[in-house]
Image 1: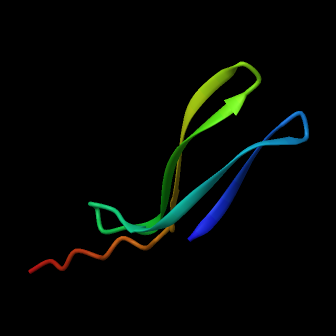
Image 2: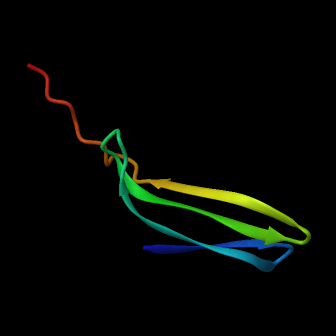
Amino acid sequence: MITIEIRQDNQTTGILMATAKTFKTGSKGYFGVGKIQMGEKRYQVQVQLVEIGSKPKVETE
């Protein structure tokens, strides 16, 4: 698990946790979703980190 800090004007407005994930494509990385408050408004946040080159190679006949 990793922690993502969301900042606005150099102040932390939210923290999002992202867990390890194997995506449908086979690529590996992290994914997290949550809600944060910025002033009077609330936002839904998603983060996706995909490891470059982690998708398995397809074997050809």
